[in-house]
Image (cartoon, rainbow over all chains, first blue to last red):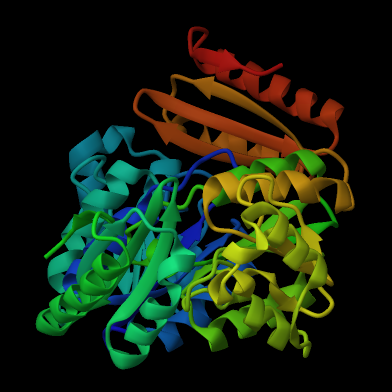
Length: 246
Length: 246
């Protein structure tokens, strides 16, 4: 693990598990956390089922510094995330005055029907995460950050919560892209991993070569490791470097 | 749950959790399972850490009819899935003769070095899943199906395992796309869900309207439910249907 500040992400949504919708939120969140030096250790995609959501939130909020969720905070009957978070923390749902005022201001009081008011019905201890796109806020409670599933709104909420998070040592990523197949460099790559256990090394083949990925919080150690691997690769074939981050 | 044949998917890969790579395998698998009447209940994305992989496989293989995995079966040191599956089932790794012959035939025996031979080093009880793209096979052991992370190879392996799986009642999906916002139809939609609990109904807003998704194994009940919701929507605004599956 590259940071002692850890995180997990819970994607709540039948539509992802049925194949209707391709998730785009994980990739956005993962990059942001990486830049903040927060180690995203796990992601779970679960259905809109109350018992599953509560059990998952309970388990992961104890295990990681932060838990992020997406989905299930809209006005329809299948939006049950706020209720589940309240239950997970033995809290109760209330009409959150600040959230209600935000909705009144955005829609006009006469347009906030019962369904819309559901979006201001939050755990009593919730603090709001602003939503500049469609007003209905996300929220956080203890170490759990609850956001919308719609990518544009999810992203706006993530941007809004970034200043609240503890920051770890930045995690640097360097890549060495080569025209050799994985099996040719596997032994040297494994030896290098043994020599530098604090640099996390991964190998990803593609048509025509291999991307060697190096990740670490120590930039000097990282650059040194990449340089050593570059030498090894060049010693096998002097024309085999396609691209290198240095 | 729409089927008593259930599944979970474990995506093994630091590259997904770091944001380097956008997963494409879940969406492919989800659609195939949906067509087979297999209910994908959960997906977990976990890092290349032995203890995490073993614990996750152990837990999910007891909970669901099938477990599918992607990633970590290549020739490099970060490819530890086969070892973890062996440990999860108290099996041992052996050189799998059939897999070895496949590699010999594809690469020529002189080109199968130690790293490549790792791709034929599998749990002793593994049965092979063919890989028409790059030969190195996936495998299955009890109810766990182990596949490559590269989408093209993953997809070929999934296509190869489909005939092995038990098939449930086909899960039908119908969508009603309307120009009304969620909050306007939320009450009627909730009432309909209460009336037809065997039809799973979800609401997904987009810029300019809402997609109402209906899923069930009983096509007649499904069509009836969509027709009732269509009537409700038309009674609110006769111009509000954008698209309807009938």
